[in-house]
Length: 459
Ligand code: TYD
Ligand code: MG
Image (tube, rainbow, N blue to C red; front, side, top):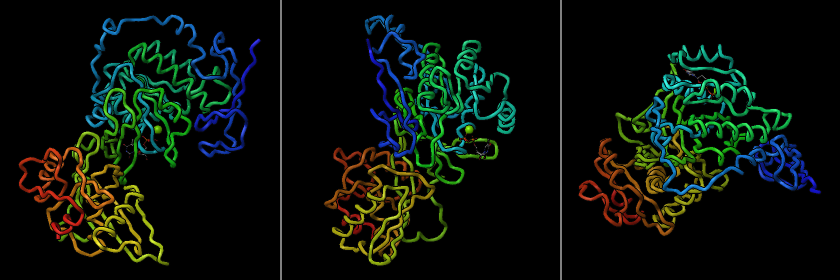
């Protein structure tokens, strides 16, 4: 006799606890733990229990056969162009048939718009657009507004799993878009829609169908302000690609790959939300770099940063003001504030300039978030310039990582950074001497090895 095992699963993050708690220890959500019963023997049960979809796979798994790797048919299916070069690059070279892609973002950021525009570009191959959020009327109105012809796009306004699977069987589309996963439900996965179990079960079934029928599946998921995909965080390991749509400036949207089985992660695509939908921005530097006619103010440094597979030029801005009450604080939401404090400490120690009695404000023009190490030396120069009130020379740019000892460390893709800076009219680049002296024969490349040398070179 096997006894049923009971565990409690968080509705928000999927965390499992052996006993009920009022608050999830992982995500901090109150009253989110739900009872789940799992047969102790494991197999021998249908997918009808409330445990995840895998329970129903026993038959399929039983039939799995061993195949020699060289005998496995290679992927003959070419990638599909999504209609946006920016999206194709983030996906690793277009839409992969049979893959599943999670597109996360805050409500109102433009996920549905992006998906509908892709649907328009891929319509000739057959697209099924499943919407649990909007009626076909609303989708039609949006399609008209952004100029997407709806002839070859099939819509389905129900999100019951069986009706979606049924529609997939009858349409057999090349691309299926589900907007959003939070509205998917199936009675097999429990009575309440929107739970982790529901979302996980439905997405598993859909991704499985898509893989077996070479259909590319896009799953739209809402992300809360705190940045977690509510519930669908648990989907990340289940899909091939995870993209996050984030806002930088009012109309600028950045699509970031955080996981990709078919391409590089940390690749970004830049879009602009316009009157008639999203347009891609193939030259984001022109957007992020501030153009000034007059003199450069103090506290401003242009830096070539490496994002995804390309170099972008961004403007880093710093401001220092005397701290009230003598306690220094750092305000920076585009560059990690811990990094800002560390760079300020390095300057204080190795350039003899005091920051510990200052409040530090740091911004990146255009609102890009930058996590790349090459931003440290430009950040140091922006802080130094802000603190001393001395602007950088015109047409100068800086790149490099900073060690705690005040040394300038090499950064990847130096040559490409120098080239990109030159293309934007920066005639003087300051940065590390690369180990293999990557920047090569560039005459306007000033090689520096410490933060003090950089300050001496610039001023
Ligand atoms: P939407 O795609 O509905 O966002 P999501 O699906 O992520 O919730 O986009 C909604 C916002 O985009 C809304 O505020 C209006 C704006 N928008 C435009 O500015 N131009 C357009 O052409 C469209 C369709 C939407
Ligand atoms: Mg939407």
